[in-house]
Length: 170
Image (cartoon, rainbow, N blue to C red; front, top):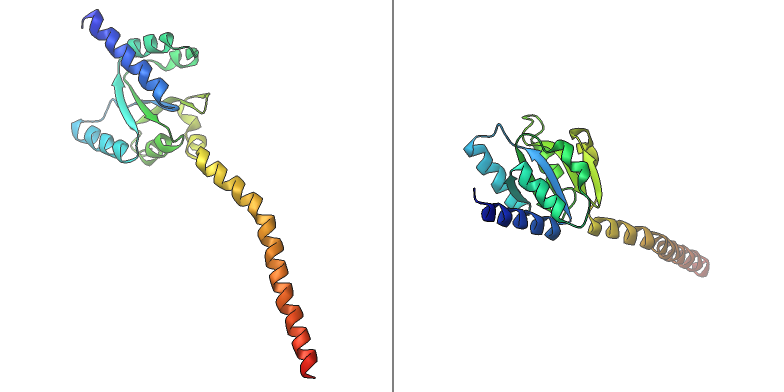
């Protein structure tokens, strides 16, 4: 491969890393063509971009970026596929779906500006909530006391109304 081509690939990987908030490094070595095609289709359905890269080119892409991705260097061995997503837990859920076959295998992840090195972090990564889910939870918590007060006032009003009606009928 020519140096120009390698530089284009490094630039493509670096721009993709900048484009997405989260990425997962996985190993899909033992997948045949049919299973790889199925995995790519599922990634597309979940809005996950799957890219198979050479470790040296990925390392050069990391080095070209402003942020320090040095923690990822020890896991850049063997075959590496990157799953890019703006939803933090989407690739983890897809990897978890295949955990019985152990392919794709999680090598590491960069999620919400944190590094997760090793497959033992998969359960934690699956349970990470997206930004919109966290905002929804906060809004629900903020609305809960107001709903309780309104509910109490409404039920109290019905009770008082019932007592007054009973007294007026007597």
